[in-house]
Image (tube, rainbow, N blue to C red):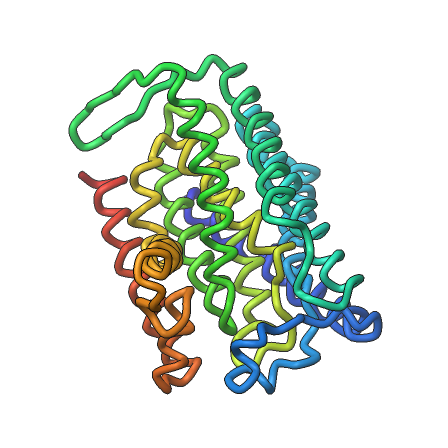
Length: 330
Protein backbone atom coordinates (compact mmCIF):
# COMPACT_ATOMS: atom_id res chain seq x y z
CA UNK A 1 0.00 0.00 0.00
CA UNK A 2 2.89 2.36 0.79
CA UNK A 3 4.38 1.72 -2.66
CA UNK A 4 1.08 2.65 -4.31
CA UNK A 5 0.80 5.80 -2.17
CA UNK A 6 4.31 6.94 -3.08
CA UNK A 7 3.66 6.31 -6.76
CA UNK A 8 0.39 8.26 -6.73
CA UNK A 9 2.04 11.14 -4.84
CA UNK A 10 4.83 11.29 -7.43
CA UNK A 11 2.35 11.36 -10.32
CA UNK A 12 0.14 13.98 -8.66
CA UNK A 13 2.92 16.40 -7.72
CA UNK A 14 4.63 16.31 -11.12
CA UNK A 15 1.31 16.53 -13.01
CA UNK A 16 0.25 19.69 -11.18
CA UNK A 17 3.66 21.32 -11.70
CA UNK A 18 3.71 20.36 -15.40
CA UNK A 19 0.24 21.78 -16.10
CA UNK A 20 1.06 25.05 -14.32
CA UNK A 21 4.46 25.31 -15.98
CA UNK A 22 3.01 24.53 -19.41
CA UNK A 23 0.34 27.21 -19.04
CA UNK A 24 3.08 29.74 -18.28
CA UNK A 25 5.75 28.76 -20.80
CA UNK A 26 3.63 28.21 -23.96
CA UNK A 27 2.67 31.92 -24.30
CA UNK A 28 6.35 32.77 -23.81
CA UNK A 29 7.40 30.35 -26.56
CA UNK A 30 4.80 31.87 -28.88
CA UNK A 31 5.98 35.39 -28.10
CA UNK A 32 9.57 34.39 -28.83
CA UNK A 33 8.34 32.72 -32.07
CA UNK A 34 9.92 29.39 -31.17
CA UNK A 35 8.00 27.75 -34.02
CA UNK A 36 8.25 24.19 -35.31
CA UNK A 37 9.73 23.93 -38.81
CA UNK A 38 7.63 21.40 -40.75
CA UNK A 39 8.83 18.97 -43.40
CA UNK A 40 8.16 19.99 -47.00
CA UNK A 41 6.83 16.45 -47.58
CA UNK A 42 4.00 17.04 -45.10
CA UNK A 43 2.87 20.53 -46.03
CA UNK A 44 -0.60 19.30 -46.97
CA UNK A 45 -1.17 16.99 -44.00
CA UNK A 46 0.36 19.30 -41.39
CA UNK A 47 -0.60 22.71 -42.73
CA UNK A 48 -2.64 23.45 -39.60
CA UNK A 49 0.46 22.92 -37.43
CA UNK A 50 2.35 25.88 -38.88
CA UNK A 51 3.26 28.32 -36.13
CA UNK A 52 2.93 25.81 -33.29
CA UNK A 53 5.78 26.39 -30.80
CA UNK A 54 8.35 23.71 -30.11
CA UNK A 55 10.79 23.03 -27.22
CA UNK A 56 7.79 21.75 -25.25
CA UNK A 57 10.03 19.08 -23.77
CA UNK A 58 10.78 21.58 -21.04
CA UNK A 59 7.16 21.13 -19.89
CA UNK A 60 7.95 17.64 -18.60
CA UNK A 61 11.71 17.85 -18.02
CA UNK A 62 11.70 20.91 -15.74
CA UNK A 63 8.65 19.81 -13.68
CA UNK A 64 10.17 16.34 -13.26
CA UNK A 65 13.38 17.80 -11.87
CA UNK A 66 11.44 20.24 -9.66
CA UNK A 67 9.15 17.48 -8.36
CA UNK A 68 12.12 15.23 -7.55
CA UNK A 69 13.81 18.16 -5.82
CA UNK A 70 10.72 18.81 -3.70
CA UNK A 71 10.38 15.13 -2.80
CA UNK A 72 14.02 15.13 -1.71
CA UNK A 73 13.67 18.34 0.32
CA UNK A 74 10.66 16.91 2.18
CA UNK A 75 12.47 13.64 2.83
CA UNK A 76 10.34 11.45 0.58
CA UNK A 77 13.32 10.24 -1.44
CA UNK A 78 17.05 10.08 -0.86
CA UNK A 79 19.99 10.48 -3.21
CA UNK A 80 21.61 7.33 -4.54
CA UNK A 81 24.31 6.75 -7.11
CA UNK A 82 21.98 5.11 -9.64
CA UNK A 83 19.42 7.87 -9.17
CA UNK A 84 22.10 10.45 -10.00
CA UNK A 85 23.00 8.49 -13.14
CA UNK A 86 19.39 8.82 -14.33
CA UNK A 87 19.38 12.57 -13.63
CA UNK A 88 22.72 13.03 -15.42
CA UNK A 89 21.43 11.24 -18.51
CA UNK A 90 18.21 13.25 -18.52
CA UNK A 91 20.01 16.60 -18.29
CA UNK A 92 22.74 15.61 -20.74
CA UNK A 93 20.38 14.58 -23.54
CA UNK A 94 18.06 17.51 -22.83
CA UNK A 95 20.95 19.91 -23.51
CA UNK A 96 21.75 18.14 -26.78
CA UNK A 97 18.11 18.34 -27.87
CA UNK A 98 17.86 21.99 -26.84
CA UNK A 99 20.95 22.87 -28.85
CA UNK A 100 19.50 21.15 -31.93
CA UNK A 101 16.14 22.92 -31.56
CA UNK A 102 17.82 26.27 -30.93
CA UNK A 103 19.91 26.05 -34.10
CA UNK A 104 16.85 25.11 -36.17
CA UNK A 105 14.96 28.14 -34.89
CA UNK A 106 17.93 30.47 -35.25
CA UNK A 107 18.57 29.39 -38.83
CA UNK A 108 14.85 29.37 -39.64
CA UNK A 109 15.01 25.97 -41.34
CA UNK A 110 15.13 22.28 -40.44
CA UNK A 111 18.94 22.23 -40.19
CA UNK A 112 20.05 22.05 -36.58
CA UNK A 113 22.97 19.92 -35.52
CA UNK A 114 24.37 17.73 -38.28
CA UNK A 115 23.86 14.00 -37.90
CA UNK A 116 27.54 13.58 -37.00
CA UNK A 117 27.43 16.38 -34.42
CA UNK A 118 24.29 15.07 -32.77
CA UNK A 119 25.56 11.49 -32.75
CA UNK A 120 28.94 12.62 -31.42
CA UNK A 121 27.36 14.46 -28.49
CA UNK A 122 25.09 11.51 -27.75
CA UNK A 123 28.07 9.17 -27.73
CA UNK A 124 30.01 11.45 -25.36
CA UNK A 125 27.18 11.45 -22.82
CA UNK A 126 26.80 7.68 -23.26
CA UNK A 127 30.53 7.15 -22.59
CA UNK A 128 30.31 9.20 -19.38
CA UNK A 129 27.25 7.16 -18.42
CA UNK A 130 29.17 3.92 -19.00
CA UNK A 131 32.05 5.17 -16.85
CA UNK A 132 29.65 6.10 -14.03
CA UNK A 133 27.85 2.78 -14.39
CA UNK A 134 31.03 0.69 -14.16
CA UNK A 135 32.38 2.81 -11.27
CA UNK A 136 29.48 1.44 -9.22
CA UNK A 137 31.06 -2.04 -9.53
CA UNK A 138 28.42 -3.20 -12.01
CA UNK A 139 29.40 -6.29 -13.94
CA UNK A 140 29.17 -6.47 -17.74
CA UNK A 141 26.30 -8.94 -17.61
CA UNK A 142 23.41 -9.45 -20.00
CA UNK A 143 20.53 -10.90 -17.98
CA UNK A 144 17.68 -13.10 -19.14
CA UNK A 145 15.64 -13.00 -15.95
CA UNK A 146 13.01 -15.66 -16.63
CA UNK A 147 15.74 -18.20 -17.41
CA UNK A 148 18.08 -17.00 -14.64
CA UNK A 149 20.84 -16.54 -17.23
CA UNK A 150 23.64 -14.04 -16.67
CA UNK A 151 25.89 -13.77 -19.68
CA UNK A 152 29.22 -12.03 -19.16
CA UNK A 153 29.93 -10.27 -22.46
CA UNK A 154 33.01 -8.41 -21.23
CA UNK A 155 34.17 -5.29 -23.09
CA UNK A 156 31.35 -5.74 -25.60
CA UNK A 157 28.97 -4.57 -22.88
CA UNK A 158 30.34 -1.05 -23.25
CA UNK A 159 29.39 -1.01 -26.92
CA UNK A 160 26.05 -2.55 -26.02
CA UNK A 161 25.28 0.25 -23.53
CA UNK A 162 26.34 2.82 -26.11
CA UNK A 163 23.95 1.29 -28.62
CA UNK A 164 21.03 1.11 -26.16
CA UNK A 165 21.30 4.78 -25.14
CA UNK A 166 21.84 6.22 -28.61
CA UNK A 167 19.30 3.92 -30.29
CA UNK A 168 16.57 4.52 -27.71
CA UNK A 169 17.00 8.31 -27.77
CA UNK A 170 16.87 8.43 -31.57
CA UNK A 171 13.94 5.99 -31.71
CA UNK A 172 11.73 8.28 -29.61
CA UNK A 173 12.97 11.22 -31.69
CA UNK A 174 11.81 9.51 -34.89
CA UNK A 175 8.43 8.68 -33.35
CA UNK A 176 7.77 12.30 -32.42
CA UNK A 177 5.82 13.25 -35.53
CA UNK A 178 2.14 13.28 -34.56
CA UNK A 179 0.28 15.10 -31.80
CA UNK A 180 0.53 13.08 -28.59
CA UNK A 181 2.22 10.07 -30.18
CA UNK A 182 5.68 10.08 -28.60
CA UNK A 183 4.41 11.61 -25.36
CA UNK A 184 1.70 8.99 -24.88
CA UNK A 185 3.95 6.08 -25.75
CA UNK A 186 6.67 7.38 -23.43
CA UNK A 187 4.12 7.73 -20.60
CA UNK A 188 3.16 4.07 -21.05
CA UNK A 189 6.83 3.03 -21.11
CA UNK A 190 7.70 4.98 -17.94
CA UNK A 191 4.67 3.55 -16.17
CA UNK A 192 5.89 0.08 -17.13
CA UNK A 193 9.44 0.69 -15.91
CA UNK A 194 8.03 2.18 -12.70
CA UNK A 195 6.22 -1.07 -11.96
CA UNK A 196 9.26 -3.13 -12.94
CA UNK A 197 11.60 -0.97 -10.84
CA UNK A 198 9.58 -1.62 -7.67
CA UNK A 199 10.38 -5.32 -8.20
CA UNK A 200 14.17 -4.77 -8.39
CA UNK A 201 14.90 -4.71 -4.66
CA UNK A 202 18.47 -5.84 -5.35
CA UNK A 203 19.23 -2.54 -7.12
CA UNK A 204 20.70 0.29 -5.06
CA UNK A 205 18.27 3.21 -5.09
CA UNK A 206 15.53 1.17 -6.75
CA UNK A 207 12.86 3.08 -4.83
CA UNK A 208 14.09 6.45 -6.08
CA UNK A 209 14.32 5.09 -9.63
CA UNK A 210 10.74 3.81 -9.45
CA UNK A 211 9.51 7.15 -8.10
CA UNK A 212 11.41 8.93 -10.89
CA UNK A 213 9.46 6.84 -13.39
CA UNK A 214 6.15 7.85 -11.83
CA UNK A 215 7.26 11.49 -11.68
CA UNK A 216 7.87 11.27 -15.43
CA UNK A 217 4.42 9.72 -15.88
CA UNK A 218 2.81 12.69 -14.13
CA UNK A 219 4.87 15.25 -16.04
CA UNK A 220 4.11 13.59 -19.38
CA UNK A 221 0.42 13.49 -18.51
CA UNK A 222 0.61 17.23 -17.85
CA UNK A 223 2.44 17.73 -21.15
CA UNK A 224 -0.25 15.79 -23.04
CA UNK A 225 -2.82 18.31 -21.82
CA UNK A 226 -1.15 20.67 -24.30
CA UNK A 227 0.16 18.15 -26.84
CA UNK A 228 -2.81 15.96 -27.83
CA UNK A 229 -4.46 16.87 -31.11
CA UNK A 230 -4.67 19.71 -31.88
CA UNK A 231 -1.31 20.31 -30.21
CA UNK A 232 -0.61 23.68 -28.64
CA UNK A 233 3.09 22.82 -28.36
CA UNK A 234 5.53 20.19 -29.68
CA UNK A 235 8.18 18.55 -27.52
CA UNK A 236 10.99 18.94 -30.07
CA UNK A 237 14.37 17.28 -29.66
CA UNK A 238 14.52 19.01 -26.27
CA UNK A 239 12.01 16.42 -25.10
CA UNK A 240 12.32 13.41 -27.39
CA UNK A 241 16.07 12.81 -26.97
CA UNK A 242 16.05 12.72 -23.13
CA UNK A 243 12.88 10.59 -23.08
CA UNK A 244 14.53 7.85 -25.11
CA UNK A 245 17.84 8.13 -23.29
CA UNK A 246 16.24 7.87 -19.85
CA UNK A 247 14.21 4.85 -20.96
CA UNK A 248 17.45 3.25 -22.14
CA UNK A 249 19.08 4.14 -18.81
CA UNK A 250 16.25 2.51 -16.87
CA UNK A 251 16.54 -0.63 -18.98
CA UNK A 252 20.29 -0.83 -18.31
CA UNK A 253 20.07 -0.13 -14.57
CA UNK A 254 17.25 -2.64 -14.00
CA UNK A 255 19.00 -5.14 -16.28
CA UNK A 256 16.04 -5.34 -18.66
CA UNK A 257 17.80 -4.13 -21.80
CA UNK A 258 16.22 -6.81 -24.01
CA UNK A 259 12.78 -6.13 -22.52
CA UNK A 260 13.07 -2.54 -23.73
CA UNK A 261 12.38 -3.88 -27.23
CA UNK A 262 8.96 -5.09 -26.09
CA UNK A 263 8.16 -2.03 -23.96
CA UNK A 264 9.14 0.29 -26.78
CA UNK A 265 7.78 -1.91 -29.58
CA UNK A 266 6.33 1.09 -31.45
CA UNK A 267 9.61 2.98 -31.18
CA UNK A 268 11.34 -0.09 -32.61
CA UNK A 269 8.87 -0.41 -35.49
CA UNK A 270 9.26 3.27 -36.34
CA UNK A 271 13.04 2.96 -36.42
CA UNK A 272 13.04 -0.29 -38.39
CA UNK A 273 10.71 1.24 -40.98
CA UNK A 274 13.25 4.02 -41.58
CA UNK A 275 16.13 1.56 -41.90
CA UNK A 276 14.19 -0.67 -44.32
CA UNK A 277 13.19 2.36 -46.39
CA UNK A 278 16.80 3.49 -46.76
CA UNK A 279 18.13 0.01 -47.58
CA UNK A 280 15.34 -0.77 -50.03
CA UNK A 281 15.72 2.58 -51.82
CA UNK A 282 19.49 2.13 -52.20
CA UNK A 283 18.97 -1.33 -53.69
CA UNK A 284 16.00 -0.61 -55.98
CA UNK A 285 15.70 3.21 -56.19
CA UNK A 286 12.07 2.70 -55.13
CA UNK A 287 10.26 3.36 -51.86
CA UNK A 288 9.12 0.45 -49.71
CA UNK A 289 6.70 2.69 -47.77
CA UNK A 290 4.94 5.88 -48.89
CA UNK A 291 6.87 7.77 -46.20
CA UNK A 292 8.81 7.01 -43.04
CA UNK A 293 8.73 6.89 -40.06
CA UNK A 294 5.84 4.49 -40.56
CA UNK A 295 3.20 6.73 -38.93
CA UNK A 296 3.53 9.08 -41.91
CA UNK A 297 2.65 6.21 -44.25
CA UNK A 298 -0.70 5.90 -42.49
CA UNK A 299 -1.20 9.64 -43.03
CA UNK A 300 -0.41 9.28 -46.74
CA UNK A 301 -3.00 6.48 -46.89
CA UNK A 302 -5.65 8.87 -45.60
CA UNK A 303 -5.82 7.88 -41.93
CA UNK A 304 -6.81 10.57 -39.46
CA UNK A 305 -4.03 11.64 -37.10
CA UNK A 306 -5.98 10.78 -33.95
CA UNK A 307 -6.76 7.27 -35.23
CA UNK A 308 -3.09 6.60 -35.94
CA UNK A 309 -2.10 7.80 -32.47
CA UNK A 310 -4.78 5.66 -30.80
CA UNK A 311 -3.68 2.57 -32.74
CA UNK A 312 -0.02 3.08 -31.82
CA UNK A 313 -0.90 3.76 -28.17
CA UNK A 314 -2.80 0.46 -28.05
CA UNK A 315 0.14 -1.42 -29.57
CA UNK A 316 2.49 0.22 -27.05
CA UNK A 317 0.15 -0.63 -24.17
CA UNK A 318 -0.10 -4.28 -25.24
CA UNK A 319 3.69 -4.53 -25.46
CA UNK A 320 4.08 -2.95 -22.02
CA UNK A 321 1.52 -5.29 -20.44
CA UNK A 322 3.41 -8.25 -21.87
CA UNK A 323 6.67 -6.80 -20.52
CA UNK A 324 5.22 -6.37 -17.03
CA UNK A 325 4.06 -10.00 -16.96
CA UNK A 326 7.51 -11.12 -18.09
CA UNK A 327 9.58 -8.70 -16.03
CA UNK A 328 7.68 -8.87 -12.75
CA UNK A 329 5.60 -12.00 -12.55
CA UNK A 330 7.36 -14.72 -14.58
